[in-house]
Every structure is written in structure tokens, then in C-alpha cells.
Image 1 (cartoon, one colour):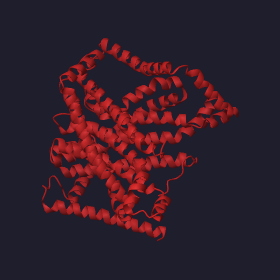
Image 2: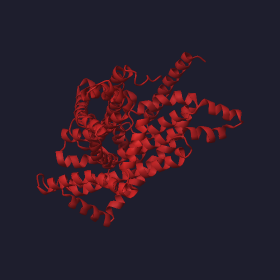
Image 3: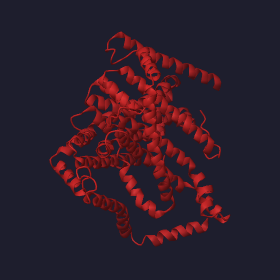
Image 4: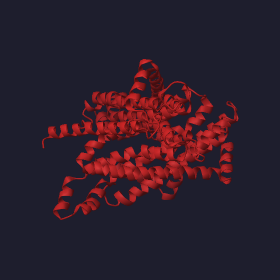
Length: 275
Length: 263
């Protein structure tokens, strides 16, 4: 054991001469694979193996991106998609946490709701899309409701698990120290279940994001990134599509890195419940 | 209260709850508040399901959906598994592919549907491509983290006992990473199942459960939709429970690597 420790310590010392250079080298190492793939793409595009309309060069994609951004079309699409995501996800978070907590706290609610929830969960959310379109019409209402409905499942399951995972000892000692129901809930159960609830929200948001793009294609909403790339297909605008896909990926990454890792950092990590 | 009594009470309540939900639905459907084309009664849905199964159309649709899922997932396993293992074993491979995977992963597979339609045309190739994309990343990342999670002490112990590279790989690394591989397959199937339904709706191709649902919308056949939804849910549930449950029991649980989940 000892030689492992000293070896790794020596390794990090030798591998890190100064923080600046490691930062620079790490950035270069991350950029390298993208350069290789970009060069390959460019090569295939320039050799015109495929029609350039279908396989545009990176330059064309970048100029489409700049053009659409400057004209305000792309930001408008992105904003509408984000608003729809926010609306659907808020719905899912509020309803999901409430149902999950009730299921975790009351045996009757658990027995009654669990079979319904577990019956709905294994059906892929996008499969409900035509049904929702039929019931609520084309457009925003269907899209938001479907996103909310689909992303509620992971929130419900994780909240329920989290509330049940709160240690019985904590509940009893809080009660022994004279906590009433409200304080028991606010000071013991909610913080105890929070790591699970956050996991559920995270999974729910990821699910919402994955479904939303597809729903926008089906629901014929006037604005939205999914609609933009689906509409671009009609005119063989592969450059617009790829620019849209890049934006979708960037938003997905930002949601994960900026929203949830930060939220987790401020709550459960600070309280010492997770590292 | 004893555990068995509690269980029977839970079962009874579950049955009551399902019956209650069905009865409520039936009452609303029969009350005529909503048009019956949009909210069919349960017998109508049952009839649509029976008709579809008896005339052979639903099984045929299900078969073509399953074919796409299996084809795409096999491709994902063939590519993702070796690549993930290589990423776990060699720093350079990891350094090259990990940034690429992290950049592609947040893009939902359905976002590629229009692009794939242009590249591969409507039909099977597009759906299989989407399934491949959806299943690849769970497979890749789980193989990668599985190999990295193998206890280094085991590797050293095996090395000290004279295991060569091949024995090390088959006797230590693969069994050690196996729980992760099973998880990867499971997640890959879940993603693939969502992706295939979406791809079939968007890249309309005459066959497939997703296409049936989407097509039924044109004819206001909510009963057909609900029947296909039931089939989609049932297949997903069966594959998850039977295929992956069996796989897990036969391998990692028998090897004692994860404990059986008590229910």
C-alpha cells in the first residue's frame, strides 16, 4: 500500500510542473480529437464524395450558424424551446415531488399510486405524443403537457425512494426532541430526501430535453429548435440542420453542467450529504 | 402487523386502485363529454388490440420495431463495447474519445432524425441509425467506467499469481466490469426503445409500432393508439424484466457481485 501512495504522489508532482502549463496542455488535449474529426469531415466534404447539399463543409455550417444568429432566427427558436422546456419541467417538478412525497409518507397513497405510476413508466414518452396531439391539439399545450408528463416519472420515483430512505432514527430523534409535523418535514425529511430528489430532477430534465426536440418536430409548433431542423429537411438545408444540432447539444451540456452541478454544490454537498 | 399481511394488503390496495382508475376512465368515456373517437371505452380499446393481434398486423409491426432495435443495439454493442474497454485500459484512447463522447452525448438522438432522413432516406436505415446513436453512449460509458472500476488490487494479485494479459482480461477485467456492462445494456435498451418509436413516427415507413400510433392519429383512431401503446409498454416491460433480469441473475448475482434486490 505504501509504495502505491508514494508512487502516485511522485507521479503527480512530476506531471504537474506549473498550473498554467497543465491548463494549457489539458485544453490542447481536449481540442485535439475535435481537430482530427473536423479535419476528416472537411476532407470528406471537400472531396465531394457526397452531394455538398447533404454533406456541407464546416465553413458552410458555421456561416449558416452566424447568419441565423445575427438575423435573430436561431435565438428565437432556442428561446422558445427553452421556455417550453422550463414550463414542462416546472410542471413535472412540482407535481412529481408532491406525488413522490405523499407516496413516501403515506402507506395508502403508496399502495394506490405505485401500480399506476409503474404502469405508465415503461412506455417511452414519445409514444404518447400522437395521443396528446389528438387530445390537446397541435401546438404548445400538447408539447408542454407531454414534456411535463414524461419527465414527472423519474421525479416521482426518486422522491418516493428518497423519502423512504430517510433514516428512521432521525425521524424518531427529531420527534423525541419535540418536533411537530411541519418541522419534522422541513428540517428532517426534506433535507434527508434532497439528494434523491435532485437526482430525480436531473434525470427528469434530461428526459424532458430528449423528448422535447422530438415533440417539437411532431407538434408543428411555430418556433423551436426541433421544428427548425425538421423544417430545414424540406429544403435540403443540411447546414441549418447541423447548426441546430450543435445548438441543441450546447444547451444540453449547459443544462447539465451549469444548472445541476451548481445546484448540487450549493445544497447537498455543502450540507455534507454527498461529496 | 406481519410482513405477509402487509403484503396482501398492499396487493389488495393495488388491485383496488387499478380497478378504480379503470372505472373512472370508463365513466368519463361513456359520459359522452368527450367525443368517443378521442376517448374510446376500454372494451373498444380491447377490441382494437384483439383485432390487431388476430389479423397479424400488430405482431408484424412489433416484429419490424424489434428488428430495428436489435439491429441498432447490436451495432452499438459491437462498436461501443470494445471501444469502451480500450478507453478504460489505455489512457491515450480515453484522451481521444472521451471529449468526443461528452460532446455528442447531450445531443438527443431524435435531433438527428431529420439529418439521417436526408442522408439515409426514409425507412429502416434511418431508424437503425438512430437506435445505434441512442444505444451507443450508455454502452460506451458503462464499459469504460466498468473497466476503470475494477479493483487495482485484483489486477495486482492476478499479476502476482502469474496471469498473462489474456488471462487478466478474461478472468479479472471482464467479470469485474460485468455489472457495469449489464447496466449499460439496460440503459442502452431503454434509450433505444424511446428512439425507435420516435424515429418511426418521424421517418414514416409503413411498418413499426411508432408508425401505427402516428398513422392512427390521421384517422382519429384513439383506440388503435391506446392498443399500440399497451403493446409498446408490454414489450418494454417484458424485455426489461425477462431478458435483463435473467441475464443479471445468471451472471453477476450468481457470481455474488451484487446482492439480490429485496422487494
